[in-house]
Image 1 (cartoon, rainbow, N blue to C red):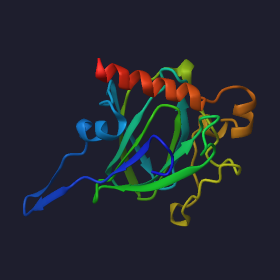
Image 2 (cartoon, rainbow, N blue to C red):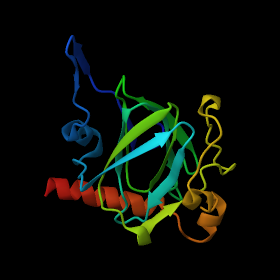
Image 3 (cartoon, rainbow, N blue to C red):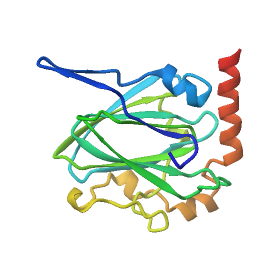
Image 4 (cartoon, rainbow, N blue to C red):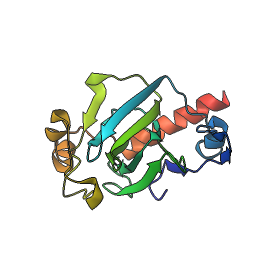
Length: 199
């Protein structure tokens, strides 16, 4: 993707009269770009109805939390937001439609923000993450922050946010409060992961 350290992956879906088969995650394929196989220590699953917005979420670096995201059922518009202060793409975002047809996936490295909006009546999203949930190290940015300007599709309806996401700070406030990861810190983390792979 145009945001460094974020990747969109489109697997091969093999279909026949029985149904279909897909390799939804290939660590070796990701390793060709990352220089290491991303570890998975927790798998999360969320079920959302149309219009539900989850995010923008991110974790302190280090350790941070990388995410590999797929839509198990339904359809979502998935957002990757660069929250790393000092990055050339700081504050920018990209979106990818994830659904249960093409089985596209998104990988985002530590330090990047993540959000999605459900576009189908019901959508199940699965995340493979590199660290367990640590509430004291997890943060959020308000997903409707006009400075970031995530483009919510009209067919999603009125955005539905959790109380936690409603109360999340705007990007400017999080930056002023020193809550955002840095580009340098994220690069150190990626280098350590690559060094571990080489060891």
